[in-house]
Length: 83
Image (cartoon, rainbow, N blue to C red):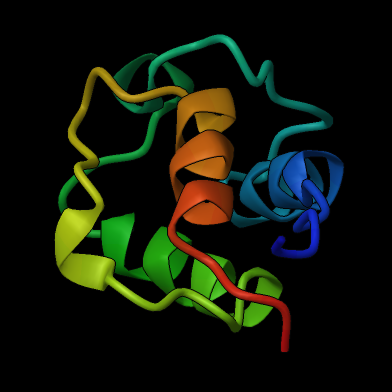
C-alpha cells in the first residue's frame, strides 16, 4: 500500500499568482484564462517540479491551456511517489 501524496494546490496557486503578479488565482480556472501563456508555461512547470519532486512518469502528464491548477495538482499527485 502506497503512502498518500499530499496536495500542494494551495502553494501552487500562491506561486502561480506571484508569477502572474496577481493577488490570487482560482484553482478551477483554466491556465489560459488565468493569463498563463506559452512563454510562462515553463515557469509553471518549474514550480511544479519544486512542489512535486516525486513525479515518476512525467510523460503521463497532460497540461494545456484548458487545464486548471486543480487538475494539474491531481495529475501530479497521481504520478508521484513519496520522496
